Amino acid sequence: MKNNRIASTLFATTLLLGAASVSVPAFSASSSPLVTFTGVDHAGINVPDMASAVAFFETTFGAKLESDIIPDALPDAWKAAFNWHPSSELKRFVMMRLPDGTGVELFQYSGKQINHERPHQDDDAATHIALRTQDVHASYENIQKAGLKTLNEPITNADGTQWFYFLTPWGSQIELVGKVKKGN
Image (cartoon, rainbow, N blue to C red; front, side):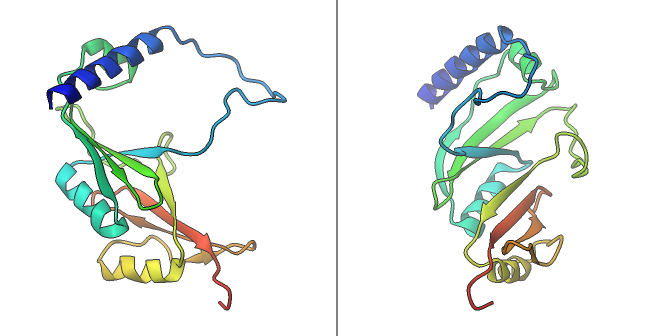
């Protein structure tokens, strides 16, 4: 636990110092990208109850707990750099690893200024995570059987991509997407 706290404090300090020296460039069309990348490592989601969220990802997707960190209090400068409420504290964060290697990082905050209402999905900064599935229709049926709220029935695009959205128990949107199975 002590090593986790030291590592998280060093990580926070490094990011804070880096964020303080960053300016926002003007973007224009370019023939080469600013950054080359090899794929998506993880998506982050804020959750109201860590134990329930971990259980949800384990049960729903077969995710495994990779790391579990309870950090020390973070400095006010860190909160300002990352646009946190001054009263907020990061209680715990964990990394879940899905069977395909994709990570889902879960954050639990506390603080009297935190807004516990979910944004509308058409509000700026609202997000969702999209996960691939082998069988969209079977996934849809299993999500419904589990009692989770689905937002639409599976839709098939002209290119054969199928998708639907559902809500986690705490209200985050997840999209499941796949290709039409041959013979359907």
